[in-house]
Image (tube, rainbow, N blue to C red; front, side, top):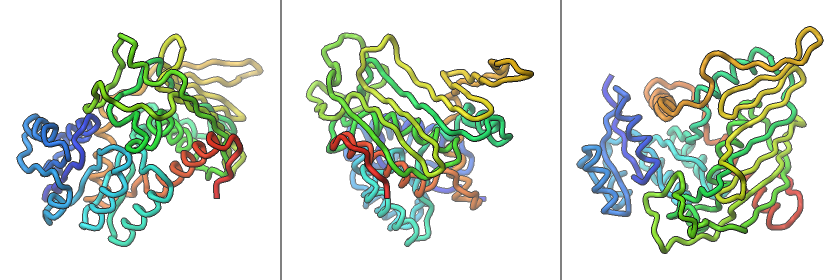
Length: 353
């Protein structure tokens, strides 16, 4: 089988994960890079040995030999770049969040359907070993009916800087950047129920904490001293689904807590689980309450996380494998995010139609 040729639109920080994963896949030729920042473009081109470099995505997309692209831009460019690539006849893997609104996401899906091309959304947590282990238990009916869940992604000082704090480019703060990961992971594990209503709140009390001397754990490749921060620093909300289940979510860039926290909790009729980061199971046996810790490693491993995602995308393109991270999934998540921000703005519950 001949290799598929892949281009990257947006060669900032997250693109490194896509690029390294593509390089490991024997069915891929990493073919071209595109970025509006020529200095960043040339640095990445030199780093990965890619000579075809473009500052205009339309010039790159005009290359008929390119089969697929990864869209790794800032959030507000996801929709226009994805739609342009689909209209140019390319398959697309678009980083999360799918867009900055449900309306944009729906237009992206329409473009994929019109052109008969794959649009996969980069919900990378679906491809983790921790997700696979939990799904194994769920599919064996270990938990019974999963009716309540909690998803937490909190940073004490974790604003990446750069475009992440600029609402015009990002669409929001930690909710759309971090919360999207755990909201999607929990919904996926619970069988992808349809969201019907939300109640949310957002705060900007601490900002990006740029005055704090300690370094943040993750920084945007475009971070500078002139960065704008006009997004929320904390978001919280409750999501109701059509099967009666409820998800409580918290996400922050800045919060006065002891240490960063990332965990999910699932509560079922038979058993419960906590992933923080190792998996713990809570149940009952022979009339006694039991806590179970697995002997196999269960904490999320980043070693093959993006490789699993990229390999799945390539397989969908080359072998017609059924995609497990679809455009419709992205639309459902955007509906939740839109509604949470609207609820935070109005102070009222928002019904999702």
